[in-house]
Image 1 (cartoon, rainbow, N blue to C red):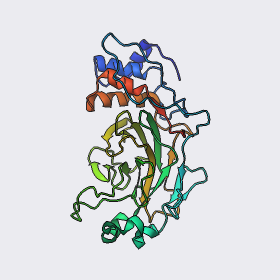
Image 2 (cartoon, one colour):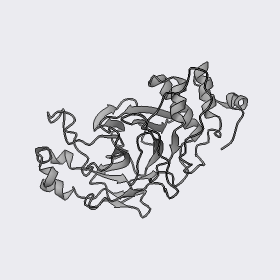
Image 3 (cartoon, helix red, strand yellow):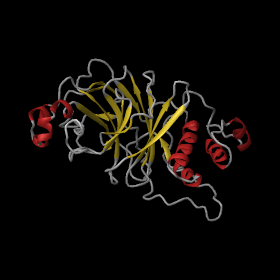
Image 4 (cartoon, rainbow, N blue to C red):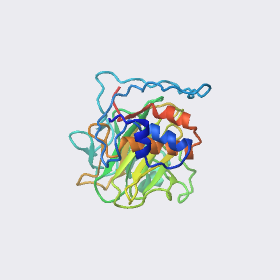
Length: 328
């Protein structure tokens, strides 16, 4: 990463606003390269950066608990087929690409066995049994701020990238049964989650539509970034996209129901998606698509303009941001 002087950074930075916010965005971006379309950086150390000096009385707010540094044996996460679930979902050998979401509905869901004996599964099987999920073997723990990316490999279809709680049932990812079916939303069995669905091109929190009009709808969009800020009881998820004109766009979504439980990256898809690679993830195994300096600057702007954080508070959070998701 290049070390730019503050003046050189300031003169090269495309300020989004003038005054203190623009200057803070510039200083946060210093240390990164230009706005290349590719990020030539693999998984960095997860150790938090040294705190910068602050004016008297402007100390950053405490963020508790402190992130746990990964061990020397830590490796980037991969997707895994969990024992006893996800029958017939297929992954690539490296655990980074879903090649099939199964071709069949989860047999236990179809037979209404175990937890699937709940009437919601029998009554609305065509909806609630369709979405089959697969999870990463590591996630984002409370106190961490981590980033990963997903890449769509087919035309927009009924699958999604996102996060869910570790060990919750996601085969199927259930239950969006309100409104049309007259059942309260969300259903009691709904797993806390946040996802970006490709066919709806919208964001869903606990399977409820959170943002269907403020996202990029171009079918040409293939890359999606997810910055998970888990400094509070429930993660704030920032979705990163590129507009048709090539500019970066960041939107933030507050989750609920995680309550300190590890937030694990996931993918879910309609069982009918099979026969060819559907989508892949990058937890730090290779350079990321989006430029880190631009990402950090856009996150800072979003935090300060849309989420009521001061520049000092936002800068303190961004010091925790690590690219990639790693095993403990």
